[in-house]
Image (cartoon, rainbow, N blue to C red; front, side):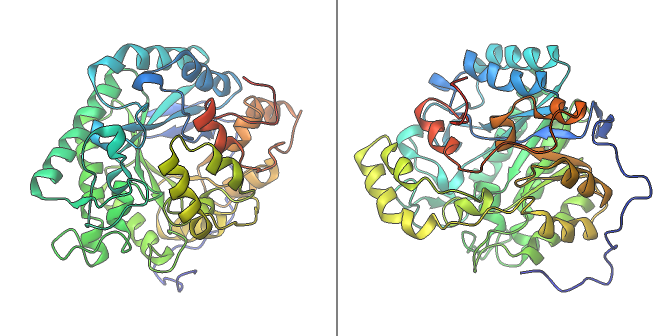
Length: 407
């Protein structure tokens, strides 16, 4: 639901000089070669929790295809923050592979970001060997158990994990760090009243629910200074009644801007445990998703919960743009528009409205060279059909577009 107009908000008006999508642009301490960012999409290619050749190539392709920056998805700041056993997490063993990945992307003339995350309530105890934690003790359909509520020592430990992970990643050559505050992972769980039912200084009013995400942003910025850009992937809303509302999402954006720790926001929405297709839109390959679950228990759980959480949302191009306009009115900091952007004229229009970067995901799975095709006039629209079968491939062979030959 759209919040009521804020009289203090600035109107969204076309820019007097529309931004050229292919011209260099600043992101904090970085100068990116254009305004296209490949957003994080869980790759499923970190075999043994390490960088694989396939993962390096997955990010090299869009870099060679013209994006300004590609984003390594879901780097857990600690072992307990993983959702899968074969997932990258902060430890010394990952350094050589991460450096190999950043070197490969830089060789193509692009920058590379990495998504810092902690799963919290979503963490998989079978992968981590530890009980999951979250803002509140409540049943998790992902861990099929009851994560415990975080205590004072957990807050201190996780803040230190973000700090250490940020230092490691900057050392490995990453140009930007994306703090995941969306999709129902730990920081999103604090923002959402659905998962945050605390009565202390980290729960209740929005400013309290936003306290821990803001603390994380500050420790990451303080740790790396200007060595890399720092931005957040922020839920504008959770997509269901009782979750984070758009009005609250806009208010969180204002708080983050006022803190001054972030260089930009990438705007998103949806909550993985409740509205997973809200953040993707289009096809729902239900049969394939159930069949690809690795254990009988997971298949049973998916059959049990999927009908209630895998609600279909019809695809509309730039489906987050209406909500993103509300954030654009409220803040002056740089914003990355995400969500089914396929057409070059839509991109030019969004930049003219005051958005600073365009984040692409599925379109670049279908055509890794799409940005170069746009630039040279060979394409004006992505070929992606939004079938979402790429999601199934993540657990089978690694995320890829099924409409083109195996990559």
